[in-house]
Image (cartoon, rainbow, N blue to C red; front, side, top):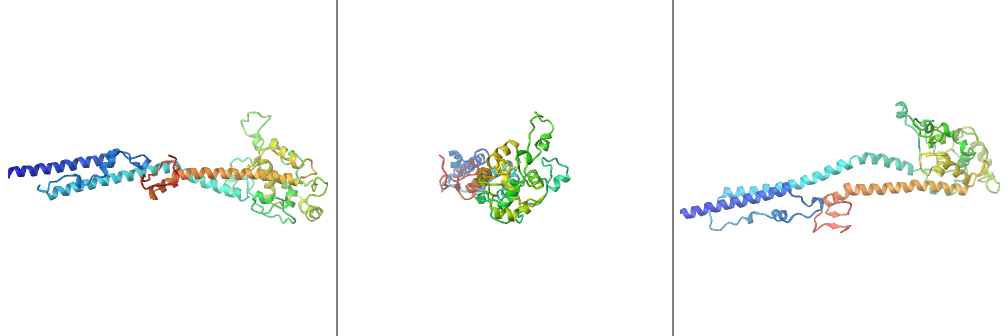
Length: 368
């Protein structure tokens, strides 16, 4: 009896020791090992530990079994598995924290930038204006007009639109009469701005006062043109009125009035020929463009003007495409790819955040 009793005690001690070792292995694996959450293979020790169950504790069939002791062992193993699960959850929380830490500040800025980009792509390119709040706060602006004027969608012009204006992607039609109203107020580079008296030329700390930065904001250009005197209806290479005599007869009285109503789309088309999508222009670029399609104060080459306007507008489109590609890469790496790895078991590339089961993961992009 003593022998049997001692044997039972030894078996109980063996069970407890095995359970304790299993518990310690599971706890250490949960606390100190790196799972495959970061895209690395799990160490073999941890993999074997995860498979540890109650059957690893060998119990002879004829040995006396203490029900309470067996229950305690099973509970210890269950708690260890729970700790391992918590370790995986902690790893996921850590990844989410990293994403929010480095990507959280990107979202508000991206929303504002996308809103501005959509407005630009829709054709309402307003540059240099200040909001009423900025004006009230006394903020300095490079736009001397401090314009808050409403965007003019239509001037009431009649006649045809500018040939090829569909490639400018303006939000409204670009009447040829409005373009003529703008060009007919431009004699040379010095008629659209007093370049050396622009606010940018008077900024403090200019390195070379004899050659200051002369930046003409888009809004200032619009205000200057609208207030300028109409020089005359331009002529084409044959000496005929641009757009035809009928258009001149129908529109000259309207466009030649002081402070005539001119649609913003026409003003933007002219400004984009030298600004190339920017909100400021410089005198050298203005002069270079005028030499192409406005060689003197009476001529106007519509075909060359349209090519320059489309070229300037295409820069805006290229910048928009580049910005969208950058966002796809950033959001794919920080948000979309980790989400698909964690919850859909799909790997689309874009970094290593998140985990995907190495055996069942659907890899749409495999760089290995």
